[in-house]
Amino acid sequence: MRIYDIIKKKRDNNELTKEEINFFVEQYSKGEIPDYQASALLMAIYLNKMNKQETVYLTEAMMNSGEVIDLSEIKGIKVDKHSTGGVGDKTTIALAPLVAACKAPVAKMSGRGLGHTGGTLDKLEAIPGFSIEMESDKFVDSVNKHKIAVCGQTASIAVADKKMYALRDVTATVDNISLIAASIMCKKLASGANAILLDVKTGDGAFMKTLDDSFELAKAMVDIGSGMNRETIGMITDMDEPLGFAVGNSLEVIEAIETLKGNGPKDFVHLCETLGAYMLVLAKVAKDYEEGILKIRHAISSGEALDKLKVFIENQGGDKRVIDDYSLLPKASKIVPIKSSKAGYISKIEAEEVGISAMILGAGRETKEDILDLSAGIVLEKKVGDYVREGDILAYMHFNKEEKFESAKERFIRAYSIVEAKVAPRKLIYGVVT
Ligand code: URA
View (cartoon, rainbow, N blue to C red):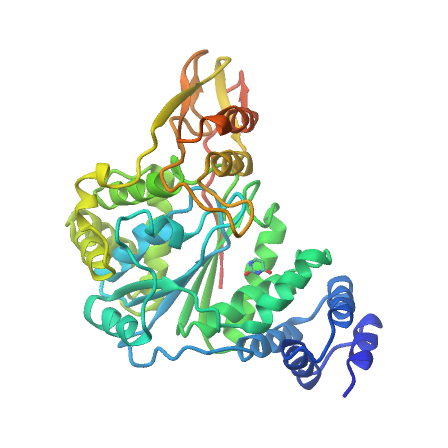
């Protein structure tokens, strides 16, 4: 088999076989295929697309290019939840203990944030002492004993994807549905879950900006999951404005804790309840969505989810006292209100601009090497649909680096559209793909 023939076949818009896709992924991972030929093939795939079967083959080959984690020693059906990334997306911190409190095992591998979107690991590390590094024995024992553990994704997973993603990034071949779907799913499948719930974000702050693209991506990923015998559900959820009020690591931890205390923002609570109910159904802990919702709500009102969060933090070396004492979390030296320059209804808060603004304050990374300020970020006071008077506070900025404030503020203000006519609050959930 020759890579030249495979490139030519895809260039001429023909379907690749399993053997050809395996050959490409294996040889490219080993360094036997140079970047220029891999780039040519990726561009041919980008332009001519892959069908469902080719996408499943690509996913499987990338999954097998690295370690495939075996979670079979963990009792019960392991359901993984994956978000395609957003601004203020602290879902895992609230959802994992919620689902675990309902007795479904949560064995989760999470990632770090880059650019305007945050990552769960960074947020968890805002809790003093919390460690995301865990030997696999302890990971398995923790889930069997406490029903919950979250660790960092090991570098040995889906090795081909890492190499290929870096190449796609510099060859304008990232935004292809098959390539994105295969890239996300190969890592999820290699992480050992039995079932997968996908939270596909849509809108300004998301990877997929339009509803059509978001549904298409969700469908492609659900097809891959089903094609590889994992029950998979995709939910399309809003990321046109930030999720909840808090953006920034320590600030998001506080909001997640408040949510488990029953004081969460409306949109975030709705998202956690819905995702949680589907996870319980996938884990066969609830017989249907309605029962799932009741169980999730009970886990909050009874305090069981908050107790589970305590156990989770303690088991991973963190200081569980943060739950009752937020002063133990990293705290910014400056907290400055940002005021509205006009009166009217908020019609838009561009999530991406808010995310970039928080990143400038130190809450996110512009490059992989950047060191985060875990205390920095933004807490919104208003959401889309709210009325503001001139001079009302739109948000508070939390930061330590004074020199960053003006440019962060400028980006933040740019995110807002305020109009005279009344505006309806945004819809949060656009649909479910099964
Ligand atoms: N996230 C991934 O992991 N892969 C992609 O291709 C895009 C987003």
